[in-house]
Image (cartoon, rainbow, N blue to C red; front, side, top):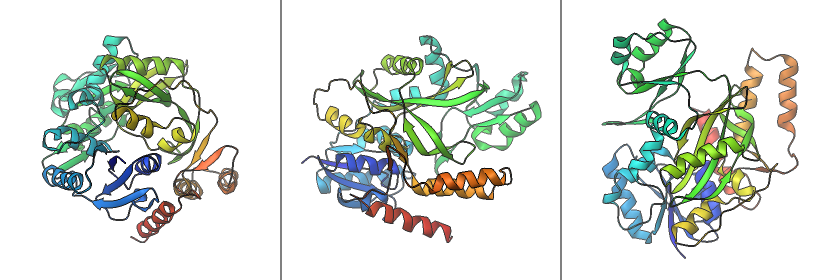
Length: 388
């Protein structure tokens, strides 16, 4: 069997990749931590530990050690930091397949300023955006905006000499608030960012798999419950038909760069149903298991493409399939129950919805009867985090 290495084994997406490939490959998983979801799965041959990608040289050395030890043929990283670190140091890796486009293409889509420029050239709708090198360039221009505005770093993760800087999108409702944000947050004061028009609407997106420029599969879902409740990671989601305008826009972008690998393309949809491109993430996503349960096995399809198999485009998947992340849903319930902004009746309704153990076509993301050890590992880590 082909030996593959799944990185970031603590992630739920890595667990999904592990379960998907476990019957077809010899799966080795690895992470910075010893106890991981992927490492607890019955589908794993063994688990390894590597140095933090913040120290690229040590990280690459550990990956090469694991490649040589198990004769690894394919790497499957599942987070931005490991994807970027591997691609930027691909020339230092031992002979191994890395199923992604080159680092230049990845950055062309992952850099939000570059993405906006590409979108405009292709006729894909994007929020009106102004680019700034740092806080000083904004202050020198003194441009007036109609508020609120979106203040967005061009990169979700910024590589620094001492590690990685995690950045976040924020909102400014006045000129004074904008000035405070860009001067007091290092992600804006010292690094490139954009100021975008605020699109009043909801988030949506599509997930795609490309084989050297050809779209092989796509998928879409909607979030039924999120953590935090005001918007965030999905804890209960449902497969839906991909919205045609979003799918068309996503394909335009990925076709233009001859994409290879997986990608999630995110939009903000206004009240008229018009999608505006927000970002492209060149990696597996958190609710990957929902796509697999719905009939689009992205990890296995990507593996087959990587090994040179001819793949016919997947044309359909099961709509209405639901996926629940139990511990994430529990966190969400806690936030609602302690929140002062929720009424007693709202809290009771949320409690009742949480206590429903089964919904038609619902599966649990981590806890599965056929492979329960990852859930016990997750529960152990959860309890350990609560005690801190």
